[in-house]
Image (cartoon, rainbow, N blue to C red):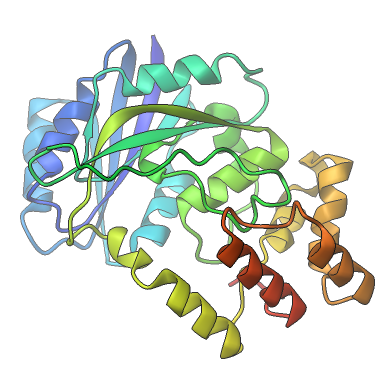
Length: 303
């Protein structure tokens, strides 16, 4: 039976976390261990996790830390977790997993060569606080082309499952900048291995006003336009990818990353502006990306 470690960052999740823990530990066809880092909760979250630990001896590991936000908290889990599990998965604290969620993802990953980094992501069924399915559902976002993937988010962290090879690859280079786990791991997987997208949903994804990651997307376009015109910058992930994984990236992809690294040079800038593969999913997003390239708003040093 495949051994799977699930990585969860918790923060003031007393309302739903017990139901989520139950759905994770009741996954079929796999041997699950849950590794939780609490990000400084001030409610009863920690007490609930400890209660569940007594119900599931040896299945739950809890680390209590100070509040540093979900991005750093999840990445800390990645760097702390042991590398002897077959597969790893991310979990939010307030969803509910269908019983075969992990098993279905692993089935897809096993179709690829295990010696290469492979990351799987799927869809979510959006529900309200009472787990009633919402009318409006997100569309599936296919894996972007390798030129587009640096600028287009597409994988929801709570659906991600990845193999041991990707964990080992991630640990070869510790990112010294703040980046979300569901941005950085898909990037590394795509440039050193493979990303698999699944149109099917095996997760009930709660959307509510108190969700930590929901708040991050309010007024996204307004904030992005304002940031560009105020002189702030769009992260240039070509820099850490080349710094950490140059020896594992194909020559074609490496050449593109080098163009981005020196994008202020006239020829590189022109090529990037004219290249139809350098884009985002929407026309508005593509225009903003091209503006960032044109006006030198790609980060010279990701922090």
